[in-house]
Each structure stands twice: as structure tokens, then as C-alpha cells.
Length: 204
Image (cartoon, rainbow, N blue to C red; front, top):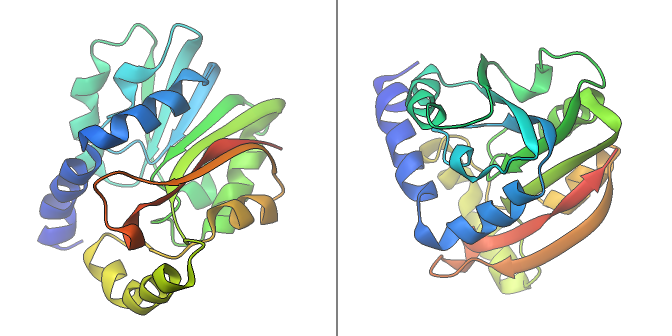
């Protein structure tokens, strides 16, 4: 792994995701989590302080050792136990039906193979479990989509594999989920091509 990917990129991602305007979206997503929670791409642990008392355990899956190290400090003040798992969402090292809630926040854009990863999330969820998500992706306006498609090949290499143009709700449904709640909006103070949001809930 290059110095940029191992040291600089994690800090850039952390700074971007700390935007105060994004906190309400994080809070709405994490407030509905319950039971044994698997957070995909836990990053530096920005969501950890937001989980409520209905969460009894958090498992944080993250491929970057550097970000896991950053997240450990955020976990020290949590009432619920937190376990960090270094690994990929395309091969989650957990048993089938062992998770009550899967949480993804601005994660599906960077996973290389999103549908297999979502299939893994569905596999580890209990039959009555839930996927809670807030993600950015493909916008409905043709003018915005044009720029997303045009810039995506250049954006991905410099942004940790982030895609600007993934149709998030379609990917979730293709992976075998049923979306039970969905809100779409543009994030405030964010360029439209990077800020079209999908926030909702899905069940296996």
C-alpha cells in the first residue's frame, strides 16, 4: 500500500466526513440501530458516540488498519462493547444470521464490488434484521448525472475508490433487500455531483 493510501488518504476522508452538515444524517441512521450492530466501513469511528442504549454491541468492519487505530480512541467512552474487524465487506467473517442491524454511512461508494458486499450483509442479518444506510450516489437530474458519469473515472483514483454515480437504492434491491423507507435529498453545502443522498432502511 502506498504512503498516500496508508497515511494521507485516511486523514482526508476523516476530515471530509466530519462535516457538521452530515451529523444529522448520521444521527438519524444510528438512532434506529439496535441489538448486535455491524457497521460496514467504520472508518475512524465517527458514528460510535451516536449509538443509543438499545445497541448492546458494535462490530466495526474496516479494511484500513490506520483507520481502525483512529477509531479505537472513539470507542473508549462507549457503554457498549466495540470489536474491530480488519477485513472486506465482500467477505464478512461472521456467521449467517448473527447480526440485528447493519449500518453503512457513506461506504457503498467505495466498496469495489457493491452487490456481493450487500449480499454478505444480507447473509449475516437475522431474518428480522435491518440494513440502515445513508449514502451518496447517482442523482435524478440529467445535468448532474452527466457530470457524475464524466468525472467518476478521474475522481475514483484520488478519492479512495469512491464512485460518484452508483444507483444506491437499485444496488440494495438487486442484492435481495426490500427497501422499507427511503428519503432522497441533496446534502447542504456540498457540490451536487457529490451530494445526492439516499437515506433509509431495508430488510432481507
